[in-house]
Image 1 (cartoon, helix red, strand yellow):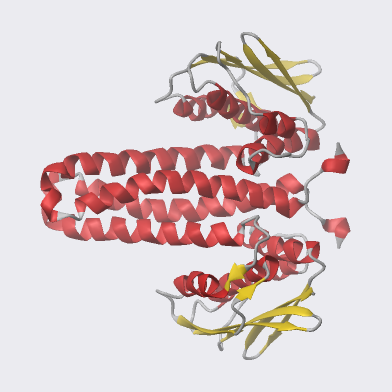
Image 2 (cartoon, rainbow over the protein chains, first blue to last red; image 1 turned 90 degrees about the vertical axis):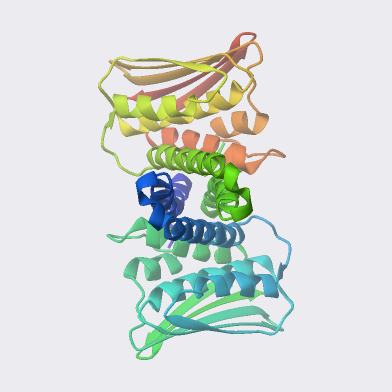
Length: 211
Length: 211
């Protein structure tokens, strides 16, 4: 699908836009808490305001930590427990739950990033509830990572599916498309490939990397 | 310099990394303020703590607003006053000052983004003080934007100069290189070109866009 490849600066801007959007969302929680705290006439609400601000700040920190791994440049193998922790953070206040079955202690960095990227898409697809099942296995032929978003109402936006196949975002939101395209491009750069299959019970995301 | 072009996902990851780094810096100010506010034994410091947290949160909001323009995708002309406001925000607590001489009421979006990008680089180059002079003019041949970082100790990192010329980051920091490369790529996509000239008194950044 190279004919449809975005220019580098277009992808970079779209991914930056998504990050900025996510930061702004958390930041508004922080700022409304701080505004209340600065209002002496609202003293009875100060404890709540501090909780709101602190929860938003923690949420932002978790999200940035997650994205730092997801968009990291390091080629060093990734610790599976660190990946699990990052993944569990996404499901802390979520209707869906996460099942984690990664046997290896470490994953090659591109596989680890694909896994986290899939899990974030699965978390988005399961807004109405369900189970995300994350798995990774080393095989003779290489590494396979697989995330299943299982739920009766699991739904993946077309621009995400397009991105995961290296396609253009079409009329969709670039903030949804860009992280998906980033997963595809990261996998392809390593000789990997991605498959997505959707059925009645949910959606399965799989990435295969050569040894 | 296409032989040295980064892959799209490399540029995107590097730019995301820079954003995450900047957010984390501000966020640590917010969190240390909130931690103090949550400590009942530090009541005498609560007013200061609230100020620290609020100032960091405002700083983060300004930075995100700046980056939203800098990395925006809209092709609509940009209001010159909005650009000036964004630029002045960078110099609010800065040793250097900003001189603004943009006569037009609006600038084409690519020119506006290049101007803001140059100004941010100039602000970084003038950490020891000086004057950043920002100018933009429409000519028959197109639009020229020009930023001079004037100061005896004005300094631009090699990875920034490389990025502004569409070159690879080399051994430099990708967080410095990526925004510079983004300016170059954005200008080139519009048929524009960039020139940087350094002298004893400072550094001049210029971008020319065809009409």
